[in-house]
Amino acid sequence: MTYRAKMDLTGRLALVTGAGQGIGAACAEALAQTGAVVICTDIDLARAENTARTLGGEARARQLDVTDSGQLNALANELPALDILVCNAGIVSNVPAEEMSDEEWDRVIEVNLSGVFRTCRAFGRRMLERRRGSIINIGSMSATIVNVPQPQCHYNASKAGVHHLTRSLAVEWAKRGVRVNAVAPTYIETPLLHGLESQAGLVERWLDLTPAGRMGRPDEIASVVQFLASDASSLMTGSIVTADAGYTSI
Ligand code: NDP
Image 1: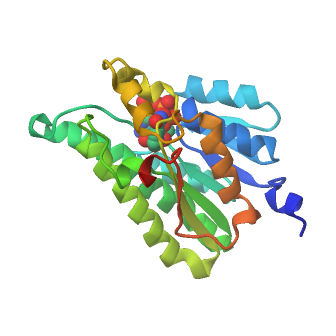
Image 2 (image 1 turned 60 degrees about the horizontal axis):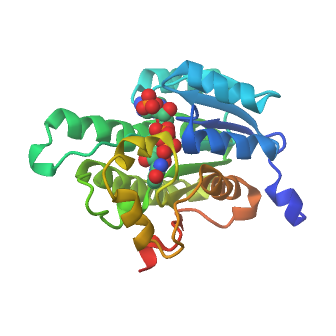
């Protein structure tokens, strides 16, 4: 197989969660541009439809809440088995640990960690039946380092969980044809960061601490996801690929 053919996703069926904006929308675009038919899902259907419209071709949109096992299982049974699954949906908030309510802790863990597990379980079952598939979870550099001065213990713990969930599923499913990897991004310019950027001096401080001196763009994460989705990464499973402009190397 040529290297060009290894990167080609023609004929592959992909689903992206949280595809209505930000990193998820960029992942949908990267997969579609390299040939995949992409099902764009988001908790907000209008946003998912907007992404699918931008992609054109055979792209489709569905409303999907990753915390809802009933919805996940129904969609997994309705669709043909996926070739590519990108578990991207995630949320964040800034709350000091000593002030965090049970509800706020549960809300973030439910979407970011339980949501990834439930999505992998629902669509992974069908991949296992076919003995083929590539799952990419969006983790974070926050899984391994703590970003000061942001109080996000629930988010950091959820992303650490995503990384180890990724390794666990990779080991369980490796002999059954399903690869599971994760990407650990630095700060990426998306709507997720808008609330945080309002904190005085925060962005400047990140930039000072980042060896490359800049944040990332959604397409820079999407191209890593495209690689992990493709046969070019056929030996990789259980890998956490860091894309952080050098942030965690210092
Ligand atoms: P965005 O908030 O821009 O996009 C996430 C999308 O997911 C939104 O449309 C959001 O809807 C949707 N969503 C939220 N909850 C659910 C749910 N329960 N089911 C389905 N969809 C849902 O985020 P980013 O693109 O920035 O982030 C994408 C992923 O990348 C997340 O997992 C995030 O943690 C991770 N990440 C982001 C970084 C960054 O700096 N941006 C850095 C490292 C990791 P709504 O807006 O209504 O919540």
